[in-house]
Length: 572
Image (cartoon, rainbow, N blue to C red; front, side, top):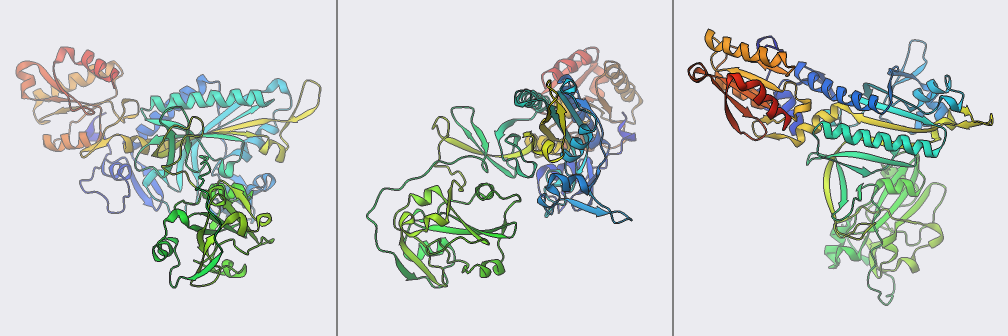
C-alpha cells in the first residue's frame, strides 16, 4: 500500500471529548471517526486491525471445530418473550416496531435466536455436539456511552454457542472454548487474566471473563499472589470479618443533626468507620431492598441481586420509594424494621459479627449507638449474605494468601448456560432410548472492537500506539527521507517490492511531506518496524530499521533487509 493513496487523516490535537487513551489515539491516528455518541466509523487503518483480530478468531474457532454462521441482527420480540428476557434484559435493549406495529429488537446477543434456529434442525443425539459462531455488530442502548470502543452503542462481537447431550459434553465444550480464547488473546498480544465472573442477564451456572489488564479498565479484579485464583470483584467471595467480642451495651438514640452520611456520623461521634453500619437502598423489579454493610465496606450490587433472587440489575431507590416503605434517607438501619411484600432487608455477614455499632435510628437527625445485630435485628425478617465488596484486608478464599487488585477491560466471556434457554424455548433432542431431553448449552463472546481498544490501552507511549505485530494495520513502514528524490524513491520501491513478495504487510510512505511529519505519523500510528531510506543509503547501501516497541535502531545493508525484517518481526 502507498501512503499517498491511504485514507488515514491524522490529527495533531487530542479531541476534547475523548475520555481514554485508546479513544484519543484511534481518533488522532486516523483509525476511526465519531458519528454520534457511542457510534463510530472505522477508517482503513482501524478496519485492517479489526480484520486481523477477526482472522485470529476464525482460525482458532475453526481449529476447535466451531462453524461460522450469520444470523439476523433484527430479532423478533416473540422469541425473547418466550425465554422470559424481553422485560428482564432491561433498558439497554434497543427495541423497535415495524410498520405493522410488530415488536423487534436490535440484537444485544443471540441466545434466543440461535436456540430457535437449532431446535428446528436438530432432533437426535446423533447430531450433537454442535458449536456455531458468528462475527457481527451488536447493539446496546448504553445509558452513558463513553471510553470510545469500550462502551459504545454499536460494537463488533464474536458470539458462539455450543449444544451438547449432557453436562459432561457441555463441560468439554466450555473447556475447549476457554482454551481457544486463551490462545486468541495471546496471539493478539494482550496481557490478560481469565477470572471468575457473574453471568448477569445471560444466566447460567458458571462463567469466566477474560480481562485485559489496564488502568483504563472499568472492572476491578482480584487475584491471588500465590495460587491461580482470580475473580471479578463482583463475584469474589469475601470472608466474614469478626470483631472482638464485647459486653452488650444498651441501645441508645443520639441526635446527629445534618449528619446524613456514615462518614459525617462517625466524625461527629468520634467513632472508627468499622464501628458503624451503613445503608444502601435499591429497587429490584419494583421492590425496595435495604442493604446493610459495615461503614468501612462497600455494597456489592451483584451480590445483593443474587441474595434476593432478582431477575434484573438493582437500581437506586427513589425518594418516593423510600417514603412508601417508611424509610428516612440518611438515617436508616434494620432496627425495628420488618420485611413486607414491597420491602426486604439484606445484611452482610460481617455486620452480624459486630458489637455495639452505630447505625440510623429511622428518623431524621438521629442514630442509634450500641446496635448489636444479633440482639436488635428481627432475625426472621432479614437475609444474611456476603454482600460486601472484597477489600485489601481480605485473603484468597482458596489458600488464604494475600490478594492483589487490578483494573481490567473485559474482552471476552465464556458461559455455561445449562438448559436455561433450551427448556424455555423447547430445544430438545431424542436420546438413545427415544426420550426427549433439553440440549445443554454454552455461549462464548469476544468483543472484537473492544480487543482493539484494549491493545492500545496496554501498548502506547507519549508518541502514539505501539502495536503488537499480529494486529498492527501494517507490520512495516518504509520512509524515504525525500520522496521527490528519484534515486531514494527507486531504492525505497525496490525494498517495498522485496518485502511484498515475501508477504510482509508493508506500507511505503511516498508522500511529499517533510521527513519529520512522516516520522511523527509512523510513531502515532504505531507500525512495529520503520525502515528509513536516506542519502546515506545511496552512499553506503545501508538503511536504518527502527523497532517501535523498544526504540532500537539497526543499520542494515539493503541486500539483508528482508531477512533482518523477518527476524525482527519474529521477535515481536
